[in-house]
Structure formats: C-alpha cells, structure tokens
Length: 159
Image 1 (cartoon, helix red, strand yellow):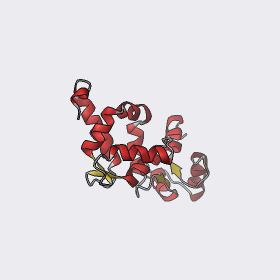
Image 2 (cartoon, rainbow, N blue to C red):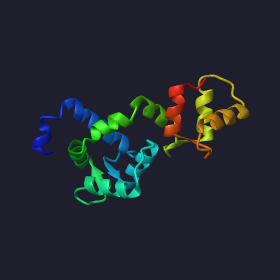
Image 3 (cartoon, rainbow, N blue to C red):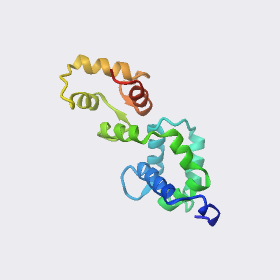
C-alpha cells in the first residue's frame, strides 16, 4: 500500500476492507476469482456494465494471475475509495441475513429456501402461503428472490 494513503487508513478501515474481501471470497480460498466478483456484484444488485466490471477486475488483479488476492484488493480499495462506496451500498446485517437464507449460495432465495425460512419460526405454512409470499416479494417475476428484492421487503416488513 502506498505511503500516500497511510495517513488516511485506520485500523478500523483495514478491518472493514478485510470484511469486504471476505464477502467477495465466497469459497474462502484466500483469493477472489473473476467469477466470484461478478457473482457478488450481481448479488448486491449493484449496477455495473460488463465493460466496467472487466476494467475493475483488470485494475484489481495487478499481477495478472486471474485472481484478486487480499493485498491487491486492499490497494485498490484504498486508492479508489471503494470502502466508502461499499459502506454506502451495503447493509451488512441484511447481507448476512440474505446469505443465511440463500443456503446454496447461488445469489437467490429459491422457493424451497423461502419455505424453510418461513417455517423455521414455527409457523405452519401451506404451499399456497409460500407461493403467495414468493409472488409478493419476487417483484421481477423470475420465481426467486434476489438481494435487492430481499432488501426491499425487509425494509418495508414481512407483514
């Protein structure tokens, strides 16, 4: 990391950057693949063209090995104000809840995952009840709940 940024980066910032990296590193292998980065961008509902995403990946992957290691991510995050952008865009409690419900980690809460969530609190849910909730929350009509739909529902409430 450049000494130019050392005065601006606190220990708390480094923890936040590490936390953001851990979210991106979906398979927990210590590096972020281009596919993982694309998946998380989609999961978060961030608007980013393929060209912009490719450019961001190329900038982050400074050694060109096809992966973004933590130090590369940290350098990029500090140099580009990424931490502030992430804080502005991400509600970490909602993201953690979404990831908990998205059991298979595909970036969506599928019907069966939704059913498990709805029944985990002891409520008896009929198949019709599950379908009704899915239809209400799934605003884009693709038959599953993505992160932006989940956030929208959570901020307005399930009842």
